[in-house]
Image 1 (cartoon, rainbow, N blue to C red):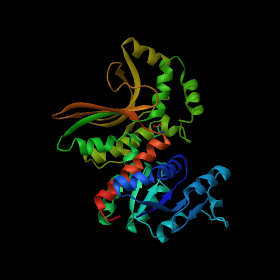
Image 2: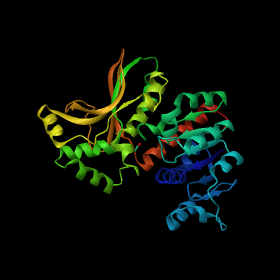
Image 3: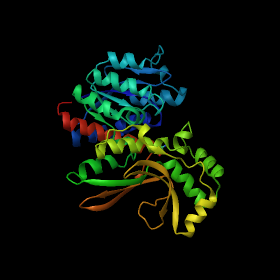
Image 4: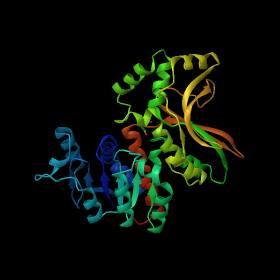
Length: 337
Ligand code: HSE
């Protein structure tokens, strides 16, 4: 039995709860995984039960009141760190929003959990973007697993592919479209909208982060590049090492000019000599040149050549499926949970 503390009950946290409800039988039958969420908290409230939280009632409470504090008759304040430091559990799942200034509150959640011996699954990129090398060391020191496959590519297993499927290969360089929101905006601009119109359409669709600069100025893509560079290329870098330029200055003229050269402007994150995020022209017939909210990444490897992976890089259920993947990996590696 895996006892889980879930930090954050937004779109991803709720999707994960729904996934556990709908998949619990086959997860046990196929993978021997029995998971029980014993604590959940977000910025407004918390719910806890060592016997396991009733996820249907929790989701209903969130829907009715907009927060989970009313799950218990007597409302529980959000006391995340107390929960992490006090509750019996094996795994912490961190889904609070990414923050690239100080990575809080996710950083404290992850560090406290690992120090207590909990394995961690995070889809929050902030702590990894700011302190990837030291978090990996902390996990090793405390003999716990730190998993983060949903931080790059959402449900599309980009990190697993490069790390495991290309095992034995030497990846020389890679470049990718790692942010769905800016790809959607640039695709709409290629269809005739100007930047302002395309941004406002992306906001209406709910794609843009609460702080739009995270997408538009390239912080999200840079964070993903940091994670790839550390994990795939064995670099020891943080977001400060990335040369970053967003898409705010891309004009419709840039896009028309690119089209006349049979290319499209895309926000590209690349690891070659430098680590860089910037708008660049990509030939229309390059497999990397995907549209809408899709992500794509091309790995150039020494012996097997170029390979491109394309998939949805965001979304509640997609990201929740990456959490499940990480939980199964932890079970396989640790064995007894
Ligand atoms: N804002 C991100 C994107 C969400 O648009 O790709 C997934 O990290």
